[in-house]
Length: 341
Image 1 (tube, rainbow, N blue to C red):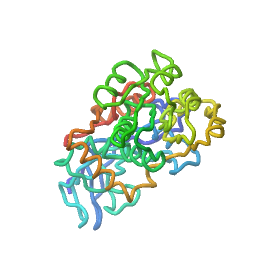
Image 2 (image 1 turned 180 degrees about the vertical axis):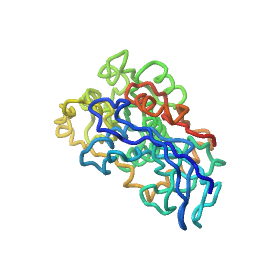
Image 3 (image 1 turned 90 degrees about the vertical axis):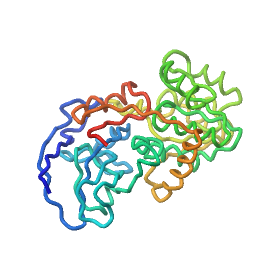
Image 4 (image 1 turned 120 degrees about the horizontal axis):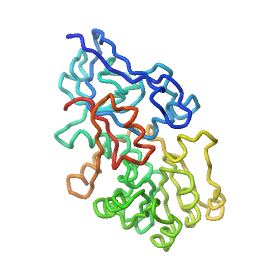
């Protein structure tokens, strides 16, 4: 094959607090020739997710931390440009663990990368980074398997305009629930109500979350899907109903702390209300992704389900673009585009 030059972002240091430019190294290297069973994937889109901040820490978690000098872990969509594997042909579009780099090279059966084909004729490729990708799978299985919603129940979701939150709310509406979002800013709240179909949205930047919950959840909260942690989690816990379910997906308000993570001070509400708090890790549901894609894809085709993507151009922008997640600057699923489709 023609020798291609790969560009990569590698983890240079463990961040303390907010990641900074010196925590990354930008490297360039030539791609080697592939052997039988291998492929080369040209990355088109990279998914930027709050979980990436946790992967940078040298701490026990559901997945090993990114090693120093290792290419930064990230999900992505790409196109197979060279193949010596019967599994993928040149021209196939694939989704998997591309990492933050221009090209991925290795075995087509690499279990860590976990590549699978996606069809741009069924949905635009960015949708496979959003509702039809890891954020959507997190929302779908977190709500339905962990939350177990019933028609008529009240569901509250924080980070409602984000990748996971927008899907949680729409799945809950499809299942007959009343849905109240929590988001930052009028534009995001208007989007959540007017475009996504939530029943209400509380703007935590301009009003009291406590007062908003009293107004929009007069009968209490049956399910809370938490993406932010901190004070908002504590506030929602004061409003939960008997046998409520709290789904812990993330805690973006805590990821860059330089002090210990703030846990829920109102946890005794779980005892009083005989409620349940449970975490969701999307990788536990890999074998069932197809079921979720089929159902949500059908809703999209029927015009019952909408998504919003915030796409930023250029691999070189990665360090600054990632920070948009923690500064509340992205509007919708944050995606980095590094090549043309």
